[in-house]
Structure formats: structure tokens, C-alpha cells
Length: 607
Ligand code: AGP
Image (cartoon, rainbow, N blue to C red; front, side):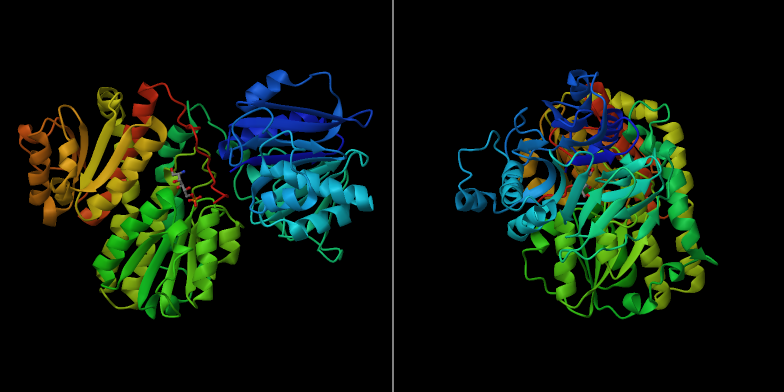
């Protein structure tokens, strides 16, 4: 939920920290701050409410520094104020943090820190605690070890001690952190996006290991003080992938990247037209023998799971349950060794999803995760991983990641059809051919609908409410359409099973209330049209999406989009493009920042 960057080395630290923060800003952007060791070994600290650009404006440009840390915040404890911005300086300690310290009140009471803080944050209490032990032991490692023995919760700390110039200390638990020692100095950050301009080689910081960054190396030790060598990894994408490349927003760029990343995700996993996961070492047994499937995720990833549930149940006739990870993790789920748990996460760091994964494993279930960020915590803790190849998704509103999560779920469906002999090889080849050709239908939508969608977006932009309705698969992906609209246009959008509206919610339909109606499923098409007539009769402004070539009388809708699919199992892919662009252009019409919508952050690493 926050972005962290640290650097020490021969280069100017201020510029590196500010650039890193701007690249990590999608992780949270309520406020930003930095701390730099100046050339006379003092610590310069600056922090401001607002985006990184605000911090940059307020930074003393005359400061020369070769060691510093920076933070961009998504507020959890304490409001959005300068005082609550990180870093926090207490005595000899300057510290920034990503995560939540659950027992900070207890620590405050136990150590008599109450009334001594200048902020409302849990983070400052961590700085107080480390400073307390540093004053006692005059040893940074002992001070850090003693403190994290006491601290409960999630944390990624970067710490500077004002009498140890040029060095940065770091330690994490749950919250993500990566690091790299290069010829240009040592770097640490919340994710590789901030390291890319300098290096492709990095390592994931193991939990409860203390790092010491110096200008020439990074030392790492476990909690017993034993030296540990890092496991180096290579970044699989380039700087350009994390830039806008001429698009006004990352979100629009990522919408247009969908055909390419869809193909990158699907093609390598087809062998003679049959889905094949042997390259990922995924045994057929987990797909063949499971008696039920439990899908767990959050937000858009969970809505991808809803589509996955519908298609797997339709094709395999086995029970599939989808759970919100934040609910599942505190539940007593009815899963066991006969359950395949599919965890879906773009970032691979969503704390609720990670906790759900850990719970699933204690129940004896095998965990297969669908993750976009390689080497992420969820990927590393899963039994098996199918990576999506979407490249970095910078916009907070997920688009291309959703599309390729769906693609992988369809590949899993196809492989299960094969190993369970639910269809002939020819039928499976037809299924995967339809999947692969969805690349073209996505491209077709991108090439043909943007002006038409934009016109509709401008018509509905200042509505207060909107409804997304459908039946079956259409209902499953209307959920994602509503979320997209909510999170970037701030219109209160709600997805509803079309047949359920008349049981109360239709009372909210009045003149010009926008209703996005999805009617691509043949077997319930007429029923859905009846439901659409019910809302139309009450004045709704209906944006209808159907398969191409379906005849619809003029009085059913105000505008009609057609998606070029024959098999309605595959209408989700082109429909998703319409729904994503409708949300994007609605927010655009309102002048909002589609990449950094209010109150949100890209990766929810706090509960
Ligand atoms: C979707 O647009 C949001 N960014 C959010 O719902 C997101 O999908 C959710 O937080 C899950 O994130 P993850 O896929 O990284 O786990």
C-alpha cells in the first residue's frame, strides 16, 4: 500500500529517491517524503501531503547526498497530513515503513511512549522502539532484532541511524521489498519497478533478515546474525514496459496492450491445440483428482475468479466456489486434500489473499496460483504457479491483468477437460482455438469502439448511480464492469443478476439511470431482454451488449454494442474491453486521474 525506495552509492541520492518514488507512486499517493544523509553527515528530512511532485517542489535542491530513503504513502493509521507522512525521525533513528503494526498501542503503553509522538502513525512507534534499544545497546542490529521481536504485524522498514552515515538498514515481514547491489551503488525498493532504470538483477528480501546497504555491497544476516547470501533473480521486462509510451494514462496503454499480453500468456501453453502446463511443472493429478475447486482472491482478481467458476462448472461439472480472500481467511472453509485452491493475484502481494493461501495449505489443499509478478510472495508460497505475462500493470485499475487471468482460467478449464476426458481432443482444440482467437476479437474491439464508447461515457458521466446487469457468464463479468466504473469515475455502480432486479433494486431505476446490460448468453438471451425491457419501461438509459448479428428492436436499448463471437463462452473477452473503456472514458469526461484514483493503491498489502 506504500512505496519505499532506498539508495546508497556514488550517485546523487536525491534524484534517485525522487525518481524511484514517482515510479512507485501507484502503490499509494496520499503523501511523500524522503531523508538524505548530507555531505556533512547530517540527515535532511522533507515530507509533504500530496503526490511526489509536491515533495520534489519542496526539496532543497542544494542538498548533495549519496545515501537516502524515500516513501510514498497510502494512509492507514492517521490522516493525510505532513506530520503523518514518512519518514519518521526519533532520536538517532530515521525510519519509513510499509505495513501495519498491530500492537503499536501496547508498545506505546509498555515503553511509556505515549504523548511523545509527533504523529498519529503506528510507524513512529516503531521508530521510537528501535531508538529506545539503540540508545541502550548502541548496536543497530541488536536494536532492530529486539524491536522486531516485539512488533506484531506486517512491515517493510528502511532505517537510517544518524551516527552511521552512508548506511541503510532494512527488514521485512509480509510487506514486499526487493534489493540489488550494483556498480552504481545499492538499492532497495517495494518492487522492481524502481530498480529497473539501474539493474535487472535483484533479490527478494527474505522475511526477518536484516539487510545492511553500503555504497559497494548489501550484507544480509538472519535473526541469529548468520550471514546469508541472496538468491538473485532477473527482471523479465524492460523500462519501456513501465512507461506510458505516449498514452495519456497507463490505464489506456494497458487496455491497448491486451491483445499482445493475451497471446503471450496463452500461446506458450498450447501444445498441438491442447493446453499444456508441463513447462511450469504442474502435474495433471491436481487437475484430474480434485473433487472441488476453491477460488480465492480480491477485487478484480476475484471477479476473474467468478468468470472462472462459471466456465469450469459449465465444462467440468465439478463444484467451484469463489471466496473473497478477506472473508475466507477468517472462515473455517470446507476444504481438504481433495480440494484444489486457485489463488489469483496480479501483484502477488495482497495480504488477504496471501493469508487465505496460507490457511488453505493448513487445510491440506494444494494451491495453484495465477500471478503476474514473478517471484512475488504469493507465487513463492504456492505449490504451483501459472504466471500471467501481462508485464507491469501500473494503473491502479486492473485491466490487462484481468484479461490474462481469465485466459489462464480458460487454459486450466481446457486442461481439465483433457485430463478428465470431458471432451474429445477435437472439441478441446476448438475450445483453445476460440480462446486464442479472442486475441483478435479484443483487437477488433480496440480498433472499432473507442469513439462510440466515449460518446456513451460522456452521456452517463454525471450520473450518480449505474447498474450492470446480466445472467450467467454475463452476470459474472458485469461484476468487474461495475468495479471499474466505481474505482475510477466514482459513480456508485452496482452489478446485478438481471433476473433479480425486480426483487427490490428496480425501485432505484428512474429516468436516465444508466443500465449496462450484457446479453451475450444464448440460453438466457430472451429472459435478459425481458429484464432489460423492465428497466427501460422505467426510464433507464440502456447500453446493451450482445453477440454480433443478434437482432434487437430499437425500443430495447439506447445504444447497442455487438461483440464478434460465435461461442458465447468467449464473449467475456471483447465485453471486457467495452466495460474497461466505458469506465476509462467516463472518468476522462469527469477529468479524473485514471491511474491514481482517490483513496486507492495498486497493491493492498495491509488488511
Ligand atoms: C482492481 O482494479 C483493483 N486494483 C483491485 O480490486 C485489485 O484487483 C485487488 O486489490 C487485488 O489485487 P491483486 O490482484 O494484486 O491481488
